[in-house]
Structures are given as structure tokens and as C-alpha cells.
Image (cartoon, rainbow, N blue to C red; front, side, top):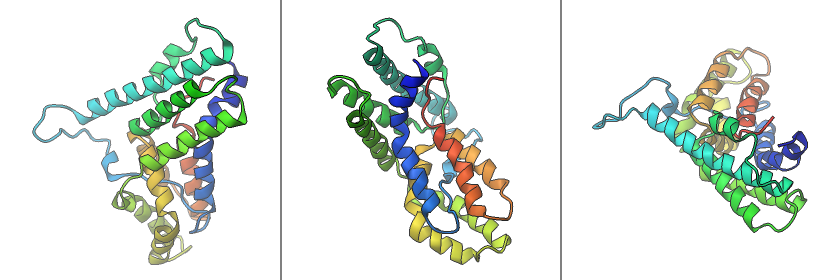
Length: 232
């Protein structure tokens, strides 16, 4: 798939995510944080009670299945764009890719985008189709929102750092995050898989004093950018 194709259509699938990122950056507590890490993202392997299945293995299989659905959408888009019925050259690369997206978020985005493509007549490289795919991404984010308590460890980490740096008291930061950013944090966390959440946690641990909020935004941006695999 050409770089032009990637920019014109596949990039549209990320439009709603970019919009969400802008909302994170615009909301309170400085240049406010854009995401967090759920408590369930502990990378240590834990056995499921009463079973012999390794949850990490189950999760990996779920991610592969979701990635396949995404790749099938990209392949359909490739065929629609080129009129070429031959095998998509990037198929194997796509299937083997590991992203930062939670399986549910990836499945929902891919399934909705494929349905939009199947219903759309003519050239998909139009603003009308881009709007449909953007809606798919936004709907997927809304559907994977995590519970408020799942973002508590990350709010704690962010506000603890701001308090230590003297940028705000711990309670002030928590109050502002809770009142303005919590919904955005809950959506971002729900969109990320274990790798994304671990990456965000590692970045948070390396924050320095001085505009902590902007640093948190910078921590989240590459994770959000890595949610969906796109051909290079």
C-alpha cells in the first residue's frame, strides 16, 4: 500500500484518537496528562484462579485475533483503492505486528471501519468516508472506557510528582484531574493493552520537575500513535 494511500485513508482511522489527544492536552492541571495505566497491567504472569491457563497467553491470542480483523480491513481497503485482487503485499507484516491497542478497541475499530467500507459506494478517499471511519474510532474509544478506580494509580503517580515538584498540592491536582480529565484518562487506558500501559508507567516514572503535565502528554502521544498498525 502506498504512502499516499496510507495518509489519505488509513490515517483517517486515527482522526478520533488525535482529537482525544488534543482534548487531553487542553484539559486542566497544567498541560494535563492524557492517559494512565490500569492496575491489571502488571506484567508479572499470574495464573487464573481455578484454571491452568496463563492469562498472558490468553491475552496474546486475543491480541492476534483482533489484529487479524484489523489487517483484513486494511486489505479490503487496499483492494478497493487499487482495484487489485491480488494478495495484499503487507498482509504478513500486518498479521505479525504487535501494537499498543487493547483487543476490544482494535476489534471494534476494525469491524466498524470494514462495515463502513462495505456500505460505502465509490472512492473511499473522500471526506464522507473519512468521517465514517473517524466515527468508528470515536465509538471504539467510548466503548472501552475503564472504571474510575482503574486510573487511580496513575492519577496518584502524576499528582505525587506534581506535589514533589511544588507545581500543585496533591489534593489540588487530584481534584482537578478528577473533575476535568478523568473521562479522558478512562478512555485512554481502556484503549491500551498491557504493552501500552507498561510503556506509559515507565514513562511516568521518569518525569522530571518543570511542566509535568506536558511531559505526561508526551508520554502518552507515542502510545496513542501506536494503537493501530499502518503500513510504512
